[in-house]
Amino acid sequence: MNEQALMTQPTVTPDINKNQPKESHDQVVIKRYQNRKLYNTETSQYLTLDEIAGLIKDGRDVIVVDNKTKQDITTKTLITYCCDQELKNSETNSSNLKDIIKNFNGKWSEALKG
Image (cartoon, rainbow, N blue to C red; front, side, top):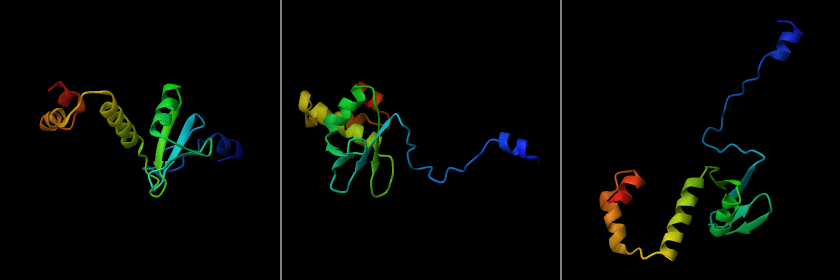
């Protein structure tokens, strides 16, 4: 192959970190430490779940990473936020939650239909 042909060949790099989230300039990366504190790497400040929700409501792409394992825990963190909000803002009681668990088959949308 000549030098010009080499320059036009696409570079393919294997993804050795498949379980790790991919960062982009549009993302706000939040690290969760073992003490459950959440750290915004963009502003170098600790923040709360409510503040993460605020970033999302402002249109930011937020990703939460466990600082020790480097795993993406965004879904788990957002579910925690949603559950906390539900408990704060509704009449949800243990009876309702037991009914959801009885009907839960791995899909929230079906479990909530009852």
